[in-house]
Amino acid sequence: MDILLISIMEHDSWLGVELRHLAALQALAAEGSFGRAAERLGYTQSAVSQQIATLERIVGEKLVERPGGPRPISLTEAGTLLLRHAESIVARLQAAQADLHALRSGEAGTLRVGTFQSAGARLLPEVMRRYVSAWPAVEVVLGEYDDADVELALERGELDVGFVLLPVLDAPLETMELVHDPYVLVVPAGSAFAQAARLPSLKEIGLEPLIGFRSDRSLEPVEAAMRGAGVEPSFAFRTNDNGTVQGLVAAGVGNAVMPRLTVDEADPRVVVRELGDEVPARVIAIARHRDRYHSPAARAFVETTLGLPR
Image 1 (cartoon, rainbow, N blue to C red):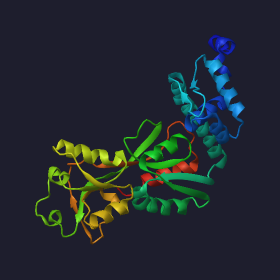
Image 2 (cartoon, rainbow, N blue to C red):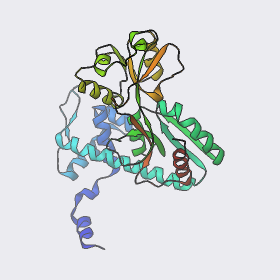
Image 3 (cartoon, helix red, strand yellow):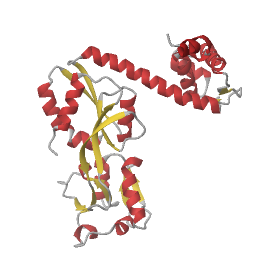
Image 4 (tube, rainbow, N blue to C red):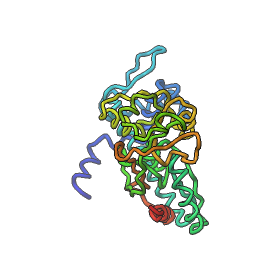
């Protein structure tokens, strides 16, 4: 055995850290009291307290501030630092569990696919038509998420593959680009912007009330482009439901700058106008965990998706 490993095993008390200790720290941070943390984990309150005390003894740091009385507990700076590592460790163990399940499943079993609204409405149906025909024994379980939440679910091992927006956030994912989805201006039919021969500038658009998404990822390119044009956009309403955005535009509440795949262009109540390259197109990709085992069924789903007409 490697000498360094022997030394660590003999002298490093951190090898005494167990998953239950980290789970107790997570529950305590989330719930704010030992009692509620115990209910969350299905332990007694004294068991949670003992696990935290053991963890503090092993790492040699005070992790929890215990003010007493009705005031909620809080993590110390050391506790907050350790919590970040604990979350990563638990996520990797969940991913390992998912890997073993996928290995046992082989070409049958369950495939968990994550998507967000527009990818689910515009890209997924054709993928599913082709995939189900080729892999009839695989049960595909679909989940719809906000765009950034697909990345988190993939990292935790809750999904096998998913549609994401590029660039991904800080997640260990392998991504394969599918389509560029340009932003367009959506205005009420009969409005001045709908009838104007000249396309309004971003500054002119930004001076009018806007309907937008709550998600920062969806709004960032739009807001950045308008600020670059010298105007701070004003949003009359925000929602992450594509149909609600378009319905509010049709009702005259405001205009919207939306990715084209989110728009129902057959809706006679609105007019869709091109923006060109003024707002960078969003890029949709198919993604999977970079370090996980990928079953034949999961690999085939990615290949089917990549085979869609561009």
